[in-house]
Length: 239
Image (tube, rainbow, N blue to C red; front, side, top):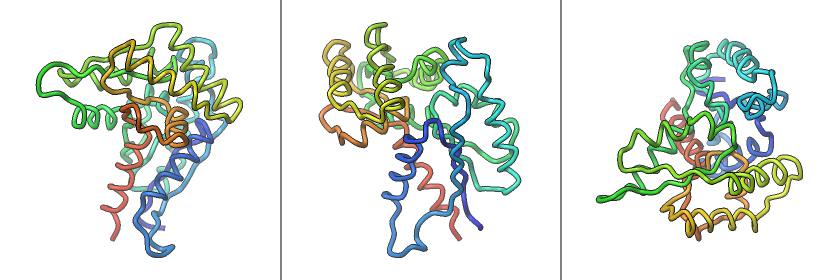
């Protein structure tokens, strides 16, 4: 197979399924042959990224991801797609083990946030919704703070717990897209935290966004932007 890319997924599996669905849905097609060539790696047994970052586990997920990258680099894909936001904490060390470029989801989301929601005067208040692990690593903060006109707003402990419940208790454990809780979180970020836009920095949140088709509250869905960039590059690389 030529002109293909490799998706490193399974973190979690439902979110990976959502990414592939969005990617296929957005691909312009007239026949089966118009779909993109890609290899999907659903590595569901990669240790939990947040647990490791928060010190709740000694199992380092980057070790497994490095093995994947070394294994699939041998096939020489055009690029890698890493569908887990929290795993981007290990991005630099992952990129070091392969000469194949890895798309950087938080960076893409930050660029889109700046382009679409940056104000001509004053700062845009950007609410960040993600796992505790992603918040702690500052992988999104660092990318968003590269733009002087963006102010990153983080949930307090109580609201972060609601976000965590939505991600882990509802989506990961129960396969439940809790629409009511999702809208409550977005409403609080908009009205109580005075946010102009929310960045969805977790693929489980992207899954809920896709399911609800929320248009009431302004969001930048990192997984959606990753799908857009994947599609752009894949079509560009076609012969």
